[in-house]
Image (cartoon, chains in turn red, orange):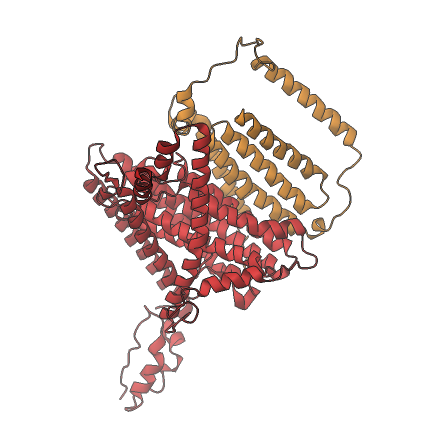
Length: 446
Length: 183
């Protein structure tokens, strides 16, 4: 009886490993079983949560587009719609396109799920609830996600389809490019926390790093959008251009595995954002609460806080998907190499410099203020530079303020003025003129 | 014991895929085998408690260099359709070269580490490993890169070299004056 109560309490305090050690003793075999059990639980959780994520995304997108979304299967809210979809995918015939490369075609879906699950090893869910606290945690995440780009090439080339290959090329170009600002943005929390361990980064956030480095958080967020291939960077599966991208030839559960990996990855980057910039499972020290009889119930609080933060970030992903249109491929690459990379390089340079200059005894609040001021200054300067460039560009289009500029923009200014009633509609024609250009000066000629 | 099992698995993966790289007829498959070989080497690094090196191997060799190789393979269209045997008439020369370099490696390593347990080498017994070094190897490596007592000069020289390569690639890719219309 006491063992059952012990088990229930351990479950509630997320310390099942301690329970097993207490009950069955400690030996290498038991430790191995605990490790394997942890891997099984974590992977199963990641795979099952996708069912919920897909339902959530469909519902949210539907609401944003003024629709109802799934509402038939499983009650009023369509809660079982995804389960039905999964059953349908599983029961589909396995098709093998002619001319496809057998190894590449079949290895790609498996490898993509493996890569999506591997990164979860360093995700800290609650104090002490982490797959493995690597001291190179952040670097590990980047290495795995960079190697997983390869899978897209496998799928694209192995399918023997020109759309798949084009989609894979786009995807690889996009992901390899956006890795650069992502790594540079990730270095900012690493510099601030003085460690690459994900658990250590959370421990260092007595004030969330979002307040230290909002610019870095924004760069990281945008890069993770591109890295997961979500809107507005979803042109690797642009339906209108290349049908479905690299997974066009996949059907049934093979397609389902790509789909699954995408959702698992999105949730992972949401969790990573929460970990690196929002303090992860931290909740005013409550997450470390240990009850009098020795059960760390605070872990449960930490887990709930972690998921609240993660799903808030995830909601923003869905929100962006429901809001923004797709951008062109040259715009994506230009935006990355000519804007994000230089900005993150400058940012990391100044963050490292400023952090070194701050005296060692400074409190966290003062340190945060200095970093925040630096970030805001950088953001302001960036916006100012962008504004000037934008104005120059528009002036080069419209002919500028120089001689003949205004005439080029409003060629019909010479006639039509001076009369009385036509003034207002003529003015309205120029209602959509570019920002920053001058108001047409209407001088009545008598 | 379990470490040795893992080592043999990793070594088997590395060597088999290394042989596949040179023996496979399809260039794309050869490139994939090369990646499997890199992966095996990364596993051996991790087995040797050099996690940072293993991840760097993954990031640089699989995430960057292999993709570069595969892009190069894909861009050369005729290469993809080659089905002829990759072997040429220099098999014997290659075999002799491989065996010679293997012999040199065995001799050199045998001078430093005992090939048979318990025997003495040039250095006497095998050097003892300080667990504190392994424990904190990543941080120690980072420090030795930037400290004046460590390797700051080679590190900076390598950085300058990389920067020069970067600038050089930009200059090569830069459109010459008068060429802009063709872009």
